[in-house]
Image 1: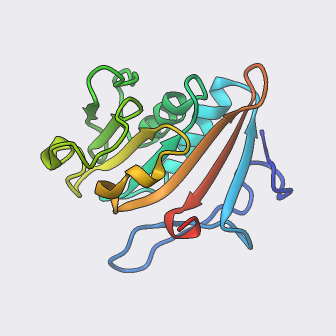
Image 2: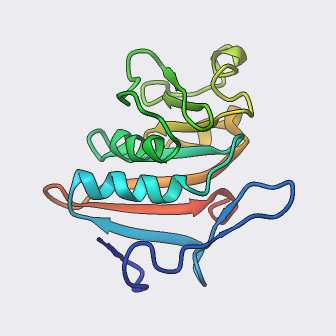
Length: 177
C-alpha cells in the first residue's frame, strides 16, 4: 500500500500533533490532501485504522464515495482502531449505529437522504453529541446539503480504481472549504 502523493509507504510522514484543548491533527507534510492507493479491502481497513489513531471525541468525519467504494470498510478499520470489538456493518437501513470502544463511535449512513434541511434537527443529535467520534457516509457531490454538519473535522473520499483497488483521499475540513 503506497501513498499516491509520492511520499512512500502509506504511513510515512504521518504524525499526530496535539495542542492543548484541541483535536489531534493528521499531518500531511507539505500537502493538505493525503492520497493513498489500496489493493484490497484489508488495506482499506488498515488506512482507516491508521487514520483513526489520531481522532478524538467530537471529531466528525465525512466519508463519501459511490456505492461499493469501500466507505463502510474504511469505517470498520477505523472502529477497530478506536477499540470497537463488535461487528461493524453499514447502517444503510437504520440511519445510524453507535458502538462502544475506547471512545463512543457513531456511524451514520445518510447516503439516501438528499438534504438535511428538511429533516428534524434532532435526527442526528444522539450521534453527533460531541462525546463520540462520528463517521458520516455521504454520496459524492452532495456536500452542499450538509448544513447541519458544520462540525465536520475531516473529509475522506473513496473511489474505485478497478477490481479491489481503491483511491482514498483524506483532507482536513478546512483544506477543502
